[in-house]
Length: 503
Image (cartoon, rainbow, N blue to C red):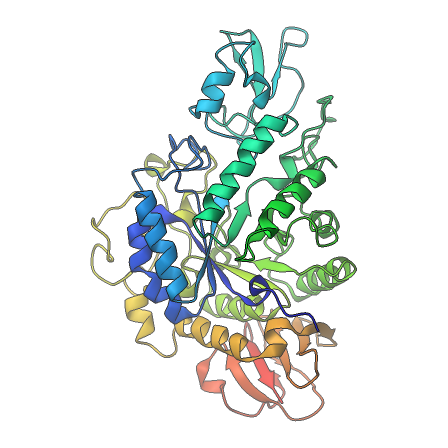
């Protein structure tokens, strides 16, 4: 039997630095929380030098740390401390575009004859306007006219984020050097931004009328796959077994599976069909069965997430109730695959209410990026009572200081679920099979490869109690209500509840 890779058994925790603990030194001070919680790896969002037009996703230097977040010594110390606690570290890598202040682009736009002109996507006007009708993710056209050189440059996001040209071998070599820089410093892999957009069609065709973003012409070009295979070869040469996790925004499990290749492209890829699935048992049954079918056909390993820095928190999305958020936690941590937690979801945080005068993000994503409250004081463990964004609701009680002391808290549920996952070969690496269940309930069985460890997971998406018939005798190992744990399963499942059962 093939030994599992570390990233198949780890639970990842996404850190958005300025809202988690302000800087790298702050993240380092909060590693005790993550170790106690039981996560196996952290993904750190961009901390590189940046004008912050898109809060770090406009990179001005790929191989340094923005002074706002510290220094390279701070980064090295963070990696060392995390590794000492058994926590791996992956970093965000943004290969689709740079900042317009990156030296590469400054040189590229200096002249049509620049040696780096072809490192970006420049084109002449068409009929007195932009080269095609592509639209940017944040609105408006995806082209900006540069009067100094009388050409347009492409940007799938803000004008301050010009797209690079991966068809240029020198640009590709420079990007490979970026990966080597961080791998040589000991990172354990990369979350790769906008994977589906890195290879634009050479003829830059117009989008048909009414095209929506995931189906835009600049997405999902087949030339992305050789780029990924070269990256995989580079990464696989390092002894720490680095992982490549792709953000593939296509909303199609079948298309996402293509980016995993046959084990020679991405190791993991986000499949956002789960992120956009409603709180509905039938919808989730479809998602789980599709993932098992499409990824199972190529031997790929699934990835699951319910929240991130780009989308409303799942507790808010599912209606704000704590019971439902608890059930979602059990679901996320027991599906076959690698779970990614978003900072604060272990506290049951909801989106913050951000008044218009405090909005700062160009994509309207401020509410899910509110600072993490660490304690119940007025400043919640931060320097100021008023931080860069408002606090999320219930910050006085939805914080680690309060919740860790309460055995029945959301935080302690996550900690118990993570511990149960680590202790069970079935939950870490076992097969998954959806079971027959009453309407409103999703039931699935996890079985270890040797058959010696089994779990059944029941999630009630409905607003009323359900009766579930199971063969044999089962004991509640983890429950959304701690009072049920350790008792025999009596066949009843409360509304918006979830159970992990062992024989």
